[in-house]
Image (cartoon, rainbow, N blue to C red; front, side, top):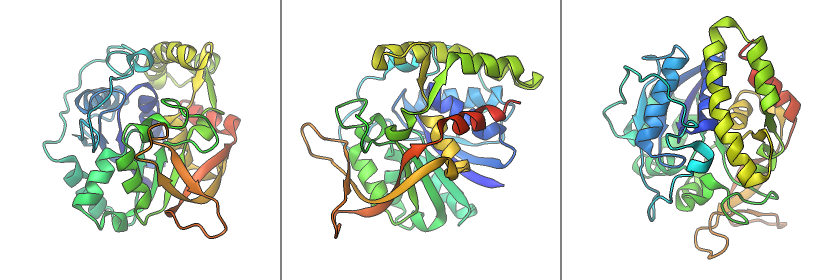
Length: 314
């Protein structure tokens, strides 16, 4: 059983990634923290709790509200044109009875990591603010974690909030740089692979038609929220009835990294550039000296990734 801890900003693709993890019989989700990004951290927690209820996991997975702003500065406007006003495509799920944990998100992550020392895979689907603040508060956190998989960054692909910056990294570059400098086993699943993994409306429709009876409500929710998300993808990427698979691909990579081609590169995050703030900088020199080695997913078997995603509903 793979034990995972999820840090997210629960929007449309986060919710799909969370549902995938909850429905996998070989995964135990032991905790979730939220930060501002697609929506506020508070709204992200509310979305998460409703998704847990939808999946029949209410009361099994503790959820904690984390950072509402990046380490430096304030949050930009939330991307409603992609995730909707409520973060899940303006779909109204029934409210949950479960409440968020009444504790600091850094304490929650650290205590959970200590309980599962050496076993935990930490998966970040949003900005890395909570993780960076946890590393500051608990410098030995990296020793407790088995591995980290982060949706974020771009090496050769263009950015999606600037010419070079991906949203999760560009939304809090200082946090991301702290995380990539920690001496743990970190793999980044960035735009180089997520933009090559295209989820089509037809794929969702086919999955809904052939899913198990107990998952019909979940597929109906995914179909509804993805309508808004694919509308946003059309505005942002000129896509029609389809979208890139961002956060779910990171979750899939955590389960089966063989789907990816991964390169280890010395890595830093640009935090000061006027035009390049949030850029992932990799040092390809013969004797690199600028950072620590991080795994970057460069190629993906997209068909296999989609098959893995939809297999949980069959």
